[in-house]
Image (cartoon, rainbow, N blue to C red; front, side):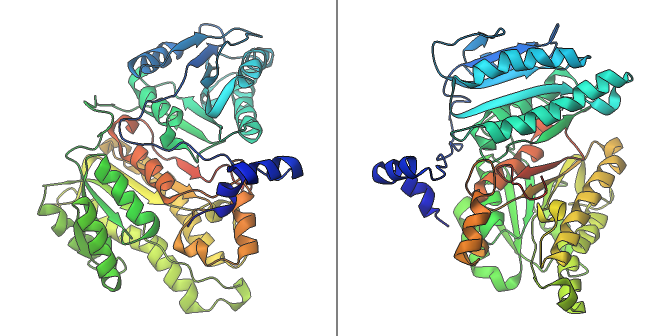
Length: 452
């Protein structure tokens, strides 16, 4: 759905009125296009002490053709910056946080539209010293606050680098959060830990040759996920219910995918998916659990049918399918080193009035992802979730206008997200470069105040 207000306040007459009256002025976000440069301008980098992660940062930026400015405290800049990367992994005392303030603060004033701030930290839980743990945890508070202070479509995110993370493990997540692919992600922490990260020949088609199953792919977010995966080189098997067969076929035909009409709540859903995969490959590379429904009602008025149907489609079906697809003996099942990505929701994090059943299902997805990621670590299968906020879809278009406008503006970017934003985040988790990222829940919500 089109956000008419954002278009209006970015036009000549509307922009003038908004500036005069003091209305919110959302910036049109820079989103990814094939072959697009990582950044439009230079990046400033700095850090605490030896700043060990900056070596990887310099390489990623150099490989992407980005000019690097070595920032100092109170530096001034001759041109607009596209990004600031600050390595605080070596910070062990509260006093050292002052270096971030003194360096990033002045640089923020030179950030251009759709700017990026990336803070690199250690994992607080892995620290043995109390002050070091407190210092590293403080970086999350700083980053979330920066996200709320960013202007003109800018975002700020935190990458936590675990003790066992390799240099290669940082490169992929860093590239994603610097890029236009993360346009609607801000104020979010992501942990990078141990994992064998393979080399990708072409970062623009990182999923080349891989087989991906995407449920709920006939429309909305699911259709966009399928398109992003196809663009990234994957062989897509698009799944949806028979009633959505025409829409599913249209999506599949547009991207050269295979359409599979299937009710994911059926007892044999896992077997049928594996059979479809086996027609293309011995094993499945990626499963995206996107299919979901809502049956909203106040808790006191929710009957057994409304409750049960939402929990079955949104949560229990994933358990049943995973049980089959994770069996190593099943042809067409998920390979060792594969990817599971589930779609949660910020409703599962913050709750939502009239959505106790939906919130329960999405919170359950989060719990499943965190536990399953540990159980599958030995098989090098990563399990992650994406939690969308207000996304412009047919479903949100049906929300009453007043409620819809509040939902759109109640985030740091002052606008709703697009289905492609969710697709980009899911594809990030599915890529080989994210092999060291597992058990994570990434909010794609423009830093929504719901559940913040």
